[in-house]
Image (tube, rainbow, N blue to C red):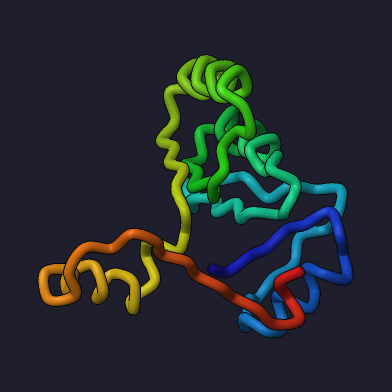
Length: 127
């Protein structure tokens, strides 16, 4: 990741410093130009999908962390809106790509049935 944007300037500057991200976009300007994909993370509101409209309309591929919608009717509206742009789009839990979880998935045969799985993350940048 080379550039980051968030409406909360203090939060985005702390994240950029912690993750060694080179550039912080100004609060009033959403960085969605060129062909570099956009990553939209869960902001705790359940409405992070609203940040996808700008890059998708510019033809920029988007990964939007889940949840994509909080209700079935929101999901149906988002699907119609997303399909109208014809731009690559993916929404899933970003945890599915964590190396430890990917490794664990390959070990399920040895572990046996899984009835409940929970993941926790925490530091000063997460809530």
